[in-house]
Length: 447
Figure 1 (tube, rainbow, N blue to C red):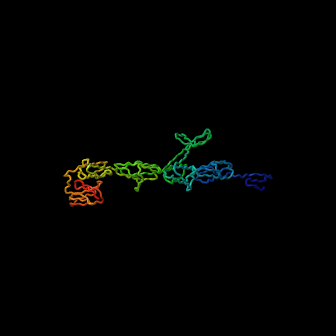
Figure 2: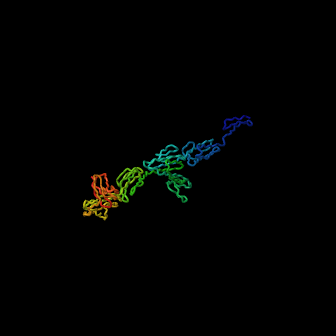
Figure 3: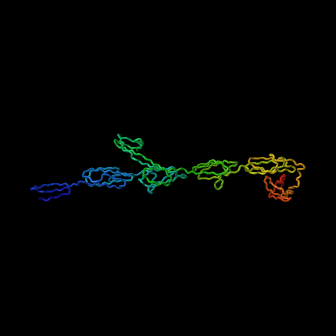
């Protein structure tokens, strides 16, 4: 027998002799199966079916499936988003599959201000809309209102797309616009696209979730397409007005820079005097008064009682004193003084007191009436009143009340005489009226 000779691992050629005859036989050594291995860059993002052991020559189909909020990029470094590949197995094969987190759209808008966005602690470019944010990224939004504005609220809208049906097939090349399709009596939104013959159309339901927030800055995690709007409005300032016996028109809340006109109307016989600040300083005496609002203001209205006019007059034979302007309701003293040889009879309202007090609730006028004295009337009895420089001397007035009035009718002295002679020294020269008891008044001139 001749020995066998091996020519190679894949094909063995063996020579043999049988009855002297040499023959050559070939034994083909080909592997029966091969292993297809798939390496996924991150198994939390997706998986691939189809890996395993296959017979030589089998056709293998690998299909990639992305997990929620992720997307498949490609096989073996490709970036074509083709999620399936088929090939014939002829040897052991290793395929790589790459997944990434799906980027989500973040839109930011603002009224009367600016918004900045930090993504995972890094400033984002708010000039690019929409911003691309990875799923579950942490973001912080900060609004800076325009001058004299403030944040009212954030409006956050998140959009989630749920696939609800895969059973619509296109029978011709068709454009499906963004509209709503009635399926089982429920309207669902269809996102615009072009579909071809016999192509399956996936209908998505759009779920919108909205929320209002007032935090600034505002933090959140992005798990869906998101719109964020910051609503800022102009600051309001309160113009408050306080005061007694006055009604004010025009106070209330105003925007910064608004023109305000205040008008004050006095009540119960009071009238407007001035607008004051909290320190009592006069801001204006105009009424109405206009100004522009630059902040909260508390104003005060100064008022005063209305002035009533009192006038007195006299007939021949004497004088009347006390004319002037007085605050509403205040007392005023009027005095009737007869000339020498005359006697005071009465006032024109019938009152016979030569010195009397009247109250001014309206403008008043009084007229004093005098008459010439007879012989009996000229007798002053035991009372004597005369001047000694700055001193008024009264004699014969023991145990009687002596009242002294100045030329304006104001009472300057009221005293009871303990002695028969009383001396009253005045600080100023001028004309004074002296009344002893309930008798008539005497006119005295001090030099």
